[in-house]
Structure formats: C-alpha cells, structure tokens
Image (cartoon, rainbow, N blue to C red; front, top):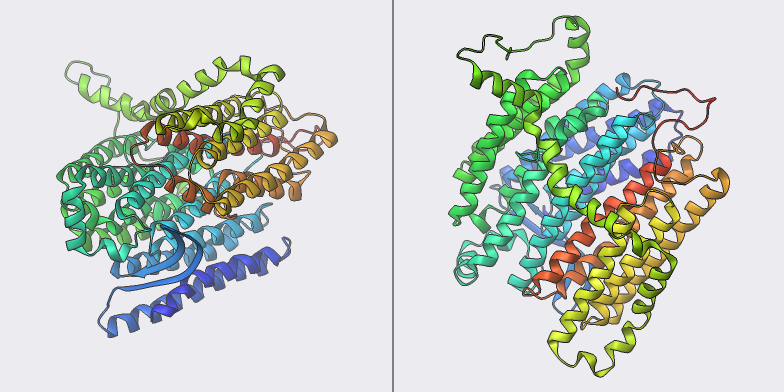
Length: 618
C-alpha cells in the first residue's frame, strides 16, 4: 500500500495541470475538472483508508524520490500515513469537492472563474502534500503552496484596494511562520546530522535519548514549530490576519479559513508530538496560546458586524481548544474536533450569503454595550477591546514591520550610485579576500560572513522601503541574493554544485524579472512603487510570468533555489547565532519585498479612465 501514497499527490497535480490547459471561457469544463479531481481523490482515499483499516491500520512510510544528495545532506520527497493523515486527507477531499460544486454556480460569469479554480486545485495539491508528508522538507513544499494560493485568493478581487492590501498583510505573517519552520528544520538537521523523517520522530526511545543530551536544542525546535503553527492557525496574538483574509470569495474563505488551511497548525503539532511530549514548557505554551485565543476570539466574534468575520473568529475559538487537547495528549479527540469544526464552518460560510440576504436588517449581536456606566466598566472595556480586535493588527505592525521600515528609510544614503559602487566592489573582492591571509582564523571567517550577510540585509531593506523605481527595488533583491551566496559559499566550505544551484536560479529569475519590468516600463512609462497600477488586466500573461519570477527568486518550491536555501542553511553551524538571525531576516523580507513589487505593479484598481472603477472593499 505504501506505493499508492504517491497518488494522493498525483491526482490533484494532474487536475491542476489539466485545468491550466482549459480555455478560460469554458466554465463547465473548468468546474468539471475541479469537481472530478475532488471526487476521484475522495473515492480513492475512501477505498485506500478502508483497505488500510482491514490490514490493521499500520503506519506507512516511504522515501519516494531523492532530488539532491551530498555528504550529510539528502533532500528527498517522502510520504507518511497514519490515522491523523487519514482523517485530514478524507475531510479535505470531501470539503474540496463540496466547495467546488458550490463554486460552480456561486462564481458563474465571474471574470476570474478559471483563476479561482486553478488556485483551489493548487491549494488542494499543497494540502495533500502536507498531510501525507514524510519529512519536514516535503511538508514545507506543501506549506509554501498553501501560503501562495491563499495570497492569490485573498486578492481575487484584484481591482479593489483592500483585498490586495490585506492579501499582502496575510502573506507577510505567513512568511514569518515559514521562517520559524525553516529555523526548526535547520536545528533538526544539526541535531540529527541528517534529514529527519517523521517515522524516526515517532521512535520514542531515540527521541528520549537525544532530548536528554540536547534538551535546549529540542526545546528551541519545538518552540519554532509552535510559533509556525500558531501563525498558520491564527492563534493569539497572530489572529489579526483572519478578518483581512475574508476579502476573498465566500467559498475560498470556507475552504481556507473555516475548514482546512486554518487547521494545518494543529496538524503540524500532532505530527511532531513525540518530539516535545516530554517538554512541559512547550505544553504550557500551547495551553497558553489556546486559552488566550479562545478567550479573545470569543469576545471579538460576538461584536463583529460581518458574518464571515464572526464565523472565522468562532472557528479559531475552537482551534484554540484543539491546541489545548493536543497539548494534553487527547489526540483522537483533537482529530474528531478538527473534522467537526471544519465541516461546520464550511457549511456556515457557504450559506452566509443567503442568510444575510434574509436577515440583512436583523444581524445578530450577542454582546451589546450597556450605556449605564455604574457597574459595567469592565463589560464596556471588553466590548471596546472586542470591537478593536484587541489592537492585534496595530501591535503586529508596530512590533514586526515598523522597525524595519524605519531602518530601511534611514539607509536612504546607500541608495545612491556611489554607495552602490562601493557595495558592489565589496562583493567583487570577496573571492580575493577568501584566498588571502585575512581569513586564516575562524573568527575572521565568521566576521566576514556577518559583514556580507549584513550587506544582503541592507539591500533587502532598501528594496522593502523603495517607493520610486521598481527596477531599483528588483536589482536590490538580486544583489541581496548574491551577497547571501558570498556570505555562505565563499567564506564557507560549500560544494561548487551547491553554489551553482543557488547562483544559476538567482541569475535566471533575476534577469527574467528585470526584462519583464523593463518591458512594462517601456509600455506604460510608469513603474513607481508609491501606488497600485493594476496592469494585470492589460497584461495577463506578463502578470503570470512576473509572479513566477518573484516566486523563483524568493525561493518558492518551483525551482532548485528552494533546495539551495535549505542546503545553504545546513552549512551554518548551530553556534553562529548572529549569522542565522540575519539570514532568517533576509529570507523573510526577500519574499515580502518581491511580492510587494508584484502587487504594486500588477494589482489594484484599473489605471485607465475608460476602465470601470470599483469600491475599495467588497
């Protein structure tokens, strides 16, 4: 049966690729492919699970495909299947099928009909990869696919201001979670000195031995996994992205933030439970996250004025409780709770447009402000905090993004041609420094790695805060990636094949992206980043091409650069804390910066006066 696990990935992959070939004006064919894909996956998963139970429901594990291998590093696609995978996979297949049938009629004659179903199938592919993944690398491929499909579907109404702006907010927080997951993978590699499989994590005796000798490292790995899961599942204080994600169609909100995507944090903690089951600190953190989320989200849900936002916050109330169940070891209950919550929220979100049509003048508010202030100070304070969503969005912006925007703005003097020549000169002389007597000591080598990693971060922050030229912002990203290569490869013992993988992808996607921006500049003569240009309507093919360039240079799993990033991190020693922090910031802001360029150039309201204008929000 192990050989059949690959078909859980091949079915949605085939559906996605076939749907790309269907003409966009063939609505019936587009929806038919999506419905057929969901139906085949549901039938196959039902058949597979039934036969799997008949043979005693053993844990299945298989190494399917080795993509790259060096001494001490092996990047491979592996699958793992147990009762957790069975429930998540079956529920996901059923919900995708139901949402596809609903969307066939709900989005009839919508301009982005095919684009919507393409993204749903791409999400389904990523989701299937996650729930059947056998190691962290395979899981991370699906994790990234779910993130980018979420970004595109939130910005589905791309001619409106708020959907585009909120999609960028959501993907920014998602990327922060991705970085925590990368850090967990990095530490796990140094702990096991190999790519760890989930089947090995379940070997309790090995985990106990490793945890006893490396308790701090294991605690850090578990902490990073918990933070990644908390962001993906919108736990407090990361819950602020939930209402922003509701700008997409109701059907995509149902499958993402009511049912499947929002529960992937739960899946991550269930899958890695043997790693942290003997760490009381992690369990207390999970219970704390869960209680804080259940309390705050319940208050917020009661005072929201939109049905979709109410349902989303009610959903994460239950997710907070599920995290508590996972921490306490009630895993069967947590899996049942997941399935019940997913199906209920899907139903509620799908019927919410109809319900609002009947009750538009009588929306339900369970928490009303009492104007008598004698004994109701606490109640009125809680009401106000609920309305303001506990200021989570403002606090996230002030703590996470504002300091880096301030730093980028303070570096404006480095955005001059003279400063760029100096930085470029430092990059050119790096090979000369490597073979000179300057780096005879380890301290000197580590110092130079920090310097060039710092140069990369400077380039990225300049791109992140660029308000004028898109070309300059893009070139800064290319220079940052080259600086990262110099920092790790030139001053480290890295194989030439690894350098070639990374550098070739950077140059290919960087050059292609620069040519695309130049063509847009030639056609429109306006590519400043101080506004949204909405060019996707006039240049749809160019929009897709530039998005591919952004994902490629950002390290998305569509190119070998994704393997290169994982590979480069293995060359960073566990005691190089400053270097890993700087490079983590680089990885975080590279994708945010390239997607910022993308949405500014191609998303937003129509530029031309002869094109219809739209409201700021749905």
